[in-house]
Amino acid sequence: MMKKRHYLYLSESEHRVLIRSLVQMKNKLIQQGRFTDCVDNLILKVLSVPVKRI
Image: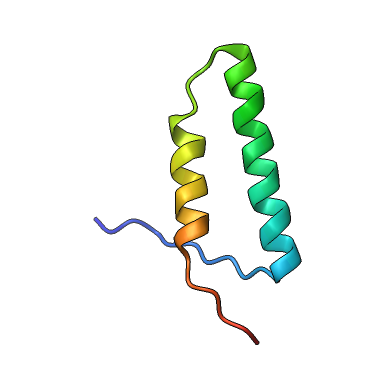
C-alpha cells in the first residue's frame, strides 16, 4: 500500500520560519532530555527540498 503524500508550498519567509521553529523545538527537546531523531529527520527533509520561485 502506497503512503499518501502531502505537499506544502511555502514562501521564502515561511520556509525560514519553519526551519527556525523546528530548531527551537529540537533545542527544547534537548533541554528536556528527550530524543530529537524525528525533528532531525524533518529538518533534513525540509532543507533538502528544491526551491521553486514563482
